[in-house]
Image 1 (cartoon, protein in one colour):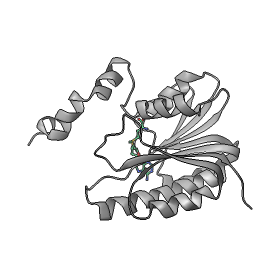
Image 2 (cartoon, helix red, strand yellow; image 1 turned 30 degrees about the vertical axis):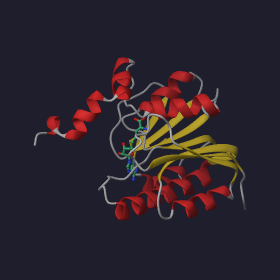
Image 3 (cartoon, protein in one colour; image 1 turned 90 degrees about the horizontal axis):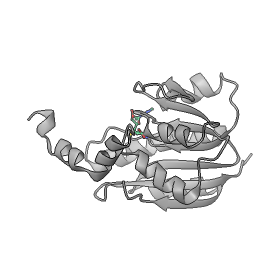
Image 4 (cartoon, protein in one colour; image 1 turned 45 degrees about the vertical axis):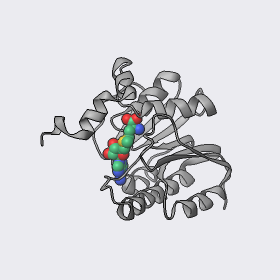
Length: 203
Ligand SMILES: C[S@@+](CC[C@H](N)C(=O)[O-])C[C@H]1O[C@@H](n2cnc3c(N)ncnc32)[C@H](O)[C@@H]1O
């Protein structure tokens, strides 16, 4: 079956968020998830220094760069991403980021780490959930190294075995933690977002 006649493609083009993203010139429908969370929790603040992990094709970076001209964004993805004004894009996998980038660059501490990273989905929970948790652990290590005191951390996760333990660990490092299912997140997907606010550096 050709790509354009697949059920995924049909659902995608009839999706209201895809239509709205095209109409408003956003690079992805994912932008509406960040927009909803930011509207409620005001994460993207003036002059903030942001790490956008799993950034391509660039909806989240686009949203943040558009909201305030004076913020700094470093965006990372394995895939290429087209340039966005005020966004420093690094094509690298997250597994290499700490060793090959964070350690070598004179990095100012970060106000917000936001990760929309997801592994390639097989549809089999016993494979997808551990793959997501493995990436989430790597992202959380980056966040713990990069965040300022009182910085914030937003990450995509899958509901399922092991996720509660991940959340319990993160809770130790932040003053508050919330689980969010944005409207643009498909109801049949296991995807959820964790927002942890006010990082406490633990030595
Ligand atoms: C859902 S998309 C992100 C969409 C993005 N937030 C936006 O608004 O356009 C997830 C991204 O995670 C990236 N990704 C997956 N595994 C990764 C890894 N190990 N390191 C870096 N990026 C990864 C994928 O290449 C993909 O572009």
